[in-house]
Image (cartoon, rainbow, N blue to C red):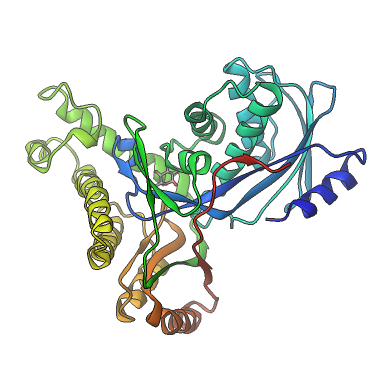
Length: 384
Ligand code: GLA
């Protein structure tokens, strides 16, 4: 990410003066997918890619926002019914509105922003955008009185209310709380978290991007969440303390087999196993047992593909190639329906894996996958 680049565009686009610059990262997730909105555990880390925004109060009641990457300029007011049409600007407007509802006296500002976290690749470019503005507005107009937990929730509420994705808290949490070199084990119910230094000696983490994003991903995502809620509802008459699938065991689930659809049942099976896998992977990591970490990653892929049904042909193909190459762990990362696989690869296999995956993917789909080496970076911050 390049501050000078963003600054030069800000100067050019507005009145020649400069403002303050803020940045927030995208994220990876080692394991724990679709567990966050089920009150379970996740294991993400912020990455060295994200969004940078320059911002300056402009003395009006309007936001003047320029997306450097899209070369698109939008103006909008801060009132409840002044939302912009451009989808990228809805994220900024949503964050402004949520901050106002949290008592921050947000005023008009000029802003230009750019990102190097690929859009639609499952690395949470949208959370990076939300966290950047939540952090910035808190600093500029809120005396930093909103704590980091609330900043993450403001990003999440923006997705729910202004974008229409009923996401969990993982992406925004990782983007705000990220710490260089560490993964974060997060309990999504209590929001208790623990940093895990991640230095897998002898291994590398690499993302392979299918460069596909399937349509209707957000409505399919919301449907998955509904399936989970249906199962919880079916269990509550007998188990009133069940709040999330986190509270459900395989035996309890079996009791409602006939009462929920086969599809909802399958989804819940996946989630219950996946929550346990996060805990297992944390233990394995503490013991330096990367073989177990990798085996769990393959299990997650299988569950996401066959039970939760959020994979796609291209992702399954990448997973098969990883397996054929002897890669220790590989799975679809993030919400699914396109985007990346995350791969835990032994150093000595890295070059062969990358060459093979590029060749075979290109031969089958006539397009090149993108490769990103994972560097675990810091969370939301002011740059200058
Ligand atoms: C998306 C959502 C997250 C999480 C993941 C799947 O990234 O934003 O809240 O549910 O999908 O783990």
